[in-house]
Amino acid sequence: MPVELREARPGYYFALGKEIIEITEEDYPYLPVMVQDLTPIPINAIRLGNMGFERIFATGACQHSFNGNVVYLKPINAGRWIVQFEGREKTRYVSYIHEVQDFWYAVFGELLKRRGPILRPVYIPYPNLTPRFLFLCNKFVFAPQEHLTLELVECNYGNTIPWMGKNWILQQHAGNYSEKVHNDASAWLKIELKGK
Image (cartoon, rainbow, N blue to C red):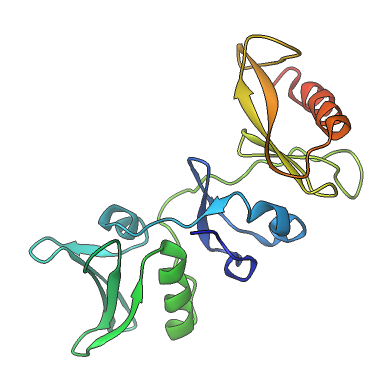
């Protein structure tokens, strides 16, 4: 299921490759490109536990309370969960973590956050006010003006970028490919990662 631009709100969690990221306001200029690479995070009991829910082992459901209101999420089938308040029928169905966050915010006016630290994309800005390239999650290079996403992959041949004791190249991941932008991004990243 692709992520729609309207779903990528500050504080909501999505997967970017194998990493979980939290959307921030800093991402807004790049979201039109970024959403192409985001995927929703399916709900499971462990992920709900990371969001503050407690698992009820007898039923497989999870519960969380806010100001005395108990909310249950109960698994049904095919990755769908029922959202239910204590003593009431189902309220709605959800399948992804950002949908749980969206429901929680709509009902309680509070953003449901993950416990503990979350990997935050590390940006290495290009030295001007409007960055040409951004390095995200130590894996992707975004060229927001060109709407191009390149992925850093391990490779031992060609014009490689040495980093962390390995050799890497940039490959097209999404967007409008341009050989010039690709070469510029590789040269930029080689300088940015030198000595890191």
